[in-house]
Structure formats: C-alpha cells, structure tokens
Length: 375
Image 1: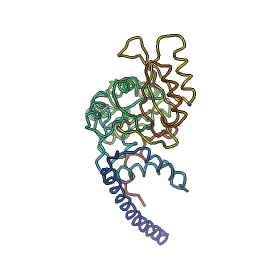
Image 2: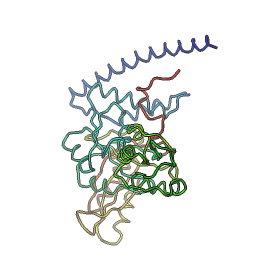
Image 3: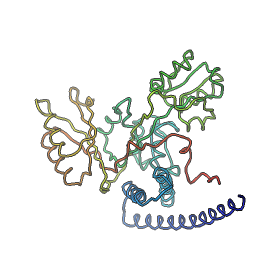
Image 4: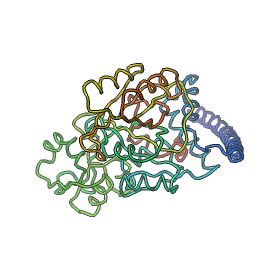
C-alpha cells in the first residue's frame, strides 16, 4: 500500500513540475500580450476573452475535474496573468468580506486589489475619477427584487456594464460561545428576514441588533462575549468566529446578481446579454409600443423605477439576450428608439449563469492557487 501511494505521489510531483513550467510560459505570453496592448493603446481587460477561454475549455474538459472547479482555477490564472501586466483595482460597496466583496473576488480573482467604498455613490465616484479600473455593484436579489439605488446611479452616470456574476447567499450563525450562551445577535435586516423561521425555533429569546453589513455584524459579535452574528464564512474567518450552525436561511438557493462596470465595449461572444434603461411618454399604448419593439429579442428581465430627476416619470431597466452588435438586437434598439422618450444602452457582456452561482462555502474560501493540495 505504501509503495503504491509513493508511486502516485511521485507521479503527482512530476505533473506539478510540468504545471509550473506551463504556467510560467503562460505568464510570459501574458506579459507579451500586455506589451502589445500598451503599444497599440488597447484596453487591458477583456471579460469576453476570459469567458471564451473558459467556455472552450469546459467543452473539451473530459473530467473528473468539474466545470465549476475549472472556472475557479482559471479565474485565478486570469488574475495572476493580469498581475503580470498591472494590478487590477476594483471598487465595491464595502466593507470587506461583504457579498459585494465576494462577488468581486468571484469575478476577478484573489490576486486583484479591492477597494471598499462607504457608499454606492463613492463606488461610482472612485471608478469615474480613475481610482479603480473596474467597479462591482449589486443589482438584484431573488427575494428582495432589484437594486433600485444601483439603477438610479446607472441612469445618471456614464458607465458601461462589462460583466455580471451570480452569488449564492448562504447564512451562518457564528460566535465564540456556544449557542445556548448567545444573548445578542447581530445581522443585516435582510439576513434576519431570511432566517426568521430558524431563529424563532432556535434563538427565540436573543436580542437582535440590525447592522449595515455582514462584516459589521461579525465584528460586533467578536467584541461581545455573549454575541453571535449571521454572516458568511469569509467574514467569520476574518474576525475569528466559530461556526455554530450552517445555512440557516429559511429558503435555500437565494442568489444575488452583481454587475461589473468598466470603460470599454465588449466584443460579441455568442452568449451575451444587453442591459438598457428607457422611459416612455405619458400617453396610452406607449409602454406597449416599447415592449413590442423589444419583442424582437428575448427579454429576460424588466423592472420599473420612479425617475427621481423627473417626478411622475418612470424608468424601465431591462435585460435582453444578445449583443448590441447582433443584427436582431440592432433592429430591436432601432425600433425602440422610435417609440420611447429616452433610452440608454448600459452595455453588452457575457451572460452569467444564475443556475451556477459562486458558492460561499468552504471549498471557495481561498484561491485554488493559494492552497496546497493535500495528498
């Protein structure tokens, strides 16, 4: 048995040596790509290219490595490649170890530099002033609906949506005391709502304090000798809390959607989504005419929102399948422009998969490139 194990380990060591050489060659090519882009004045970040690489590799992947693991590995390879060219700065609504921070990690890998901002306005301001290469904002949650404040800012600011991701929302009860000793519970309002049934059954008599973020909840729980927090595993680890109960949300499978903002227009990938905002005149049939124009495409989402700049008017945020350069989308947008009082294309970008969200579990706690494989 020991002899067989030793042979397997020797073969793994040999493969690891080859992987190091191959990865370094890939990094050399990444440096050359960066040099060519710099000379030609081309954008340094192309999410559509990364999407195409992962999709091609998934199609030829024979297993047993799963596609989700493959994507996680290449997310870090892409991040390391970018690091050879420049340090990618990503702004997000902070603090650290919130869902927005985790969404940014899921999009751009652990090797990027992340800039927590105190508000959504600061995220947009930091991005537009060039303090960050990209920005990540929440836009939708399965139970709370759409992120209205994000839509307002997308309407009033000149930005481009260049990517999206879906994040699984999983809640953990975390503390440094046992469950029976918990007297105070810290959590975001949404987390308390999503765990109401479990809390009533298991922690019915504790005092609940609403917090601005999961990270804030974890920090307060650490400072309170009888405190516990509803937070994610990342926040629990960073603030030194133990896990008392896993996945305490009443409805499993909660997901949140996030958008990445950039400065360049993506090329078509063949699996794209286009987001836009429009408004219609106040007359009979105006909305019907707009929706008829967009019926040339597959509309996957639409949401109305009061226009804060023009009281009495509504904005409509919509997602349609396809890229803005696809002929059917071009025709739909041309038809829409003839029926509405205003419309703005926010961007076309590779379509994320809501059925395969980034999971906030122990397997994704760290970068695959940071972990030593146990063998």
